[in-house]
Length: 332
Image (cartoon, rainbow, N blue to C red; front, side, top):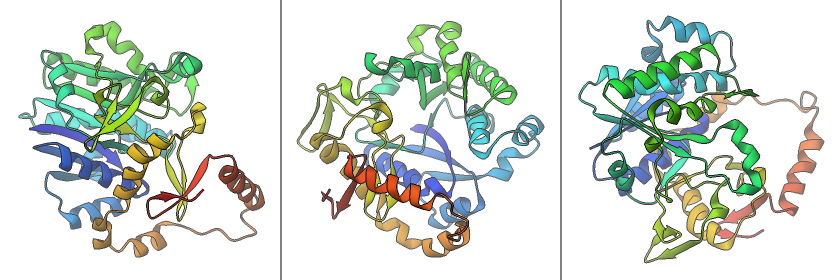
C-alpha cells in the first residue's frame, strides 16, 4: 500500500483528478489524502466519492493550529499554500499512526508507470527528495532550489518527523514567493536536507520528476505503449507551467526554460495529459455552475491591459509558445 497526500483548489481540480487517475492506472493500492484549499473542491471530491481518495477540509486541517493561522494573515494565497506544504504530511502522519511512509505530491504530476522503483530506493531511508537536475544551460535556476517539491517522502520515524517539524517551523517563519539569499518559498529549504540527513536521501531514478526544466537531458522514446527516458521507464512528469489558455489553445510552460516542443514530447507526454484533463468524470459535477460562481468577470473598462494581453496571446501562437490542439492533433 502506498500513501500519498497533496493539496489543490478548484483552479487545479482537473489536474488533481488527472493525477489521481494516473495513479489508479499504475499503482496496485494506494491512499491519497487531498487537502481541499476551498469549499468547492471539497464538495466536488466528496460528491465524487472516489476510491482511495480522502478529501480533507481546510477548516479541519487548520483547527487549533494557531501558528499556521497566524502565518496565514501575513502572506498571499499562494504563499499560504506553500506554507502548508510541510504541515500537511505532518498532519496526516499524526492522524494516522499506521502510515509508515507518506509521500507528498504536487497536483500537476502525472504518472506514466508504477512508482515502485522510488519506493525500492526508499528502503532503509527516512526521507526522499529529488533534484531538479537542471542542465548546465540554466544552472542559475538553482537559486530557487537544487531540489524540487514535486515528490517528497517522509517515514513515520524519529528522523522523518523531526525533519517535518524543522521544515514546518522554517516555513511558518518565512515562506514568500521570492528568492532571498538562501530561501525561496517552501522549496529552497530543501537544499539543507542532505546536509542534515545525508546525501543518500536524494532519489536517483531518471524517470522520476521529468519536467520542462530537465527534459533536454534525456532521450525520449516509446515502446509497446510505454514511455522511456534514456531507456528508463518514465515514472511521472511534472507539468509545471502548463495551462489551457482558451478552449483548444495550450501553453506548454517550456519557454520559461528556453525549451521547445518536440514531436516526441507532444505525442508521448503532452497529448496524453490533455486527454486525461478532459476525462468524462468531470461531467458528473456541474462545472458550469462552479465556474459562474467562482470566476468574477471584469468589464472592458476594468481590464486596462486587454489589448496588450491580446497581442501577447497572438504572439504566443506565432512563436510557438502556445499550440492549438483539436481532437488530439496539433493544428498550429
